[in-house]
Image 1 (tube, one colour):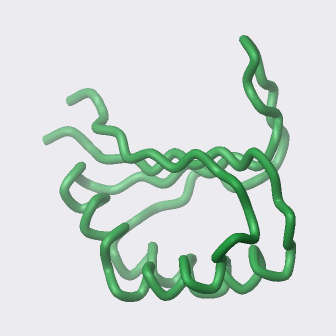
Image 2 (cartoon, helix red, strand yellow):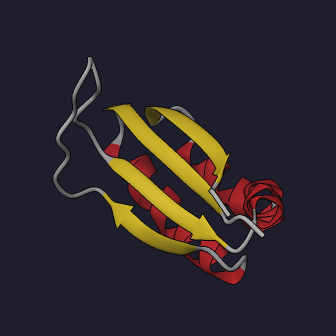
Length: 97
């Protein structure tokens, strides 16, 4: 079964305090849902009009598990804390089996 991945690229971070509040809630929500964070922040090399800003990569055992984690009550609480503190592109993609 192909794995599922959260890929999140932050265009801007307008409120670092909201991002910190989100991180405190999101990290345990992701872990409880079976997610494994492989990249979060750190160095980014962007190409082809890409954005060299914070990038997050989380792996789940399946696409369905990744979607369920995004829709979970715990993660929804984290999104409320984040609110309008960032502008990001968040995707869930299915891996190659």
